[in-house]
Length: 185
Length: 133
Image (cartoon, rainbow over all chains, first blue to last red; front, side, top):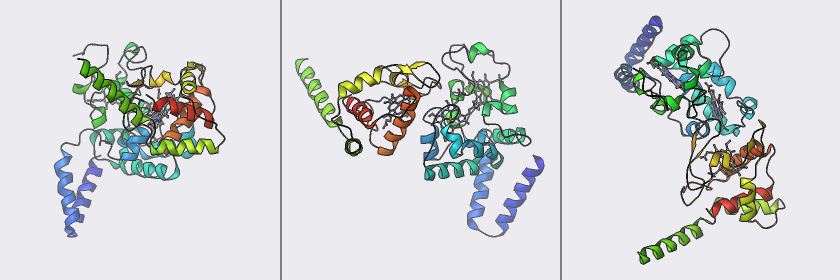
């Protein structure tokens, strides 16, 4: 982590010294945003939001590593996507594929994405965010009755049922509200 | 009060006559006819919309399972609980305006509910029924 951060700084500095005004602008934007980049980059692609947000909340690309998106966003895999037909035409699939690859966990500076990237660095690519070690760990003490047994949640996969700002990429404790169960302190 | 009611009735008439077709549905009705469908019937569409059959996972399902009973209100995806915007064009202007979108969801939803694709006749009847809402 540390070394990656240093490398990024170095690269940014190099870009700057190359004299490109654009790179300089990006660098300052990046630095200003860095302190706020604690969460997950919100979705900013219309095709992704429309297609991948119709049956469930549109999971941010920063919630899984590229190798997971590559498995999920395959023509055959989408025809049987967790038991549903989520197939896309070629052009849309390419746009969505490219978008997730460019914004996958390991490409992101957002804190939570970095944790997800780290947790999935080795081993098989998970097909579910709920299988990522970091996500499992942050949820393991939530009782079943609040998830599966809760008619307004049903599954750990429906992040936005409990995380009221999930669409904005915000998952911190303060914005959690489990339906039908009073806030725990 | 009376005037109010008359105005409302007029408004509703207007809304329903406006909603009876969109360029996208015109195109689809023509396509379905070319594929062999005879005339389209809203009452038949209504009936199949509510008819329950065993979907892929063996549970009894109909189109109303996700789109709800009142088409002017939001529905909920039966698995994911995700809110689905109202199906009635009178309540949701974006409905039935995109040929590709309509065909894509007919394919998915017919497979979910009937475990097969819908025929041109069935799709035309569904659309006729939905456009009147």
